[in-house]
Length: 252
Image (tube, rainbow, N blue to C red; front, side, top):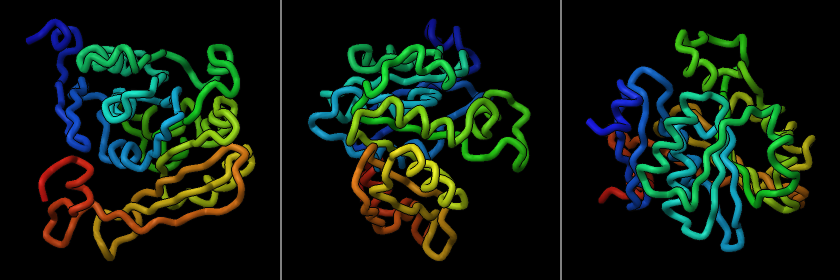
C-alpha cells in the first residue's frame, strides 16, 4: 500500500476511462464518492479554444477537474471544495495524475469566494451542486455525503450568484441538476444575468422519466435556448448505450 493510500485509508484508487483518457481518483470507501452525473456533466461541457481559466465549484474528489484537464491541455482549472477531507483527497488525486501544472485545488467556502477571487476572472464555471433542499428527503447520516447531496452549506441560488460574479461577460456556466427543479434553475439563471442556452435531459432508459437535466448558460448572453436530443444511459438489455460507451471510451 502506498503512502497516499495509508494516509487516507480506508480508501480506493479508482481508474476512470473518459473519451479514452485515463484518470485515477482517490476516494474514501465510506465517504462521498462521485457518481455518473459527474461523468455526464464533463461530457456535456464545451470548452472553447480561447477558454483559459475554468473553475469547478464544489469539486468533491476533483473528478470533473481531472477529466477536463486530461481532455483539454490548454486550460487551467481551479477546483474549490468546502469539505477539508474531500479537499485533501482531490489534491492527492491531482498529484497522482501528475496534473499539478493544470489543476489547482483550494479549500474555500462559497461565502468566502469573493475574498479569494476577483470578479469576472474565469472563462467558464462548472458545478455539480447538491440536488436536494435541506429539509427534503432523508439526510444521509454520513456528514460528508449529506453536505454533498443536500443544501446544508449552500444552495442553488448562492451557487448561481457566485457563478455570475466569477464569469467574464459571455462566459459559460455548466451544471447538472434534477428536472423537478428546472423552473427554479431557469429563474435563478436569468435573475443573475445568465441566459439559458443549451439543455439536455438524461434518462436511465427509454420510457422512464428524466433523471437529470444538463444546462449551459451564458453570462449576458442573448435569448435562445437549444434543447438537445435526450441522452439514455442504458439500453433495453441493461447495457450501456452506444453513447455512454463513447463517453467512457469503450468499444461498441
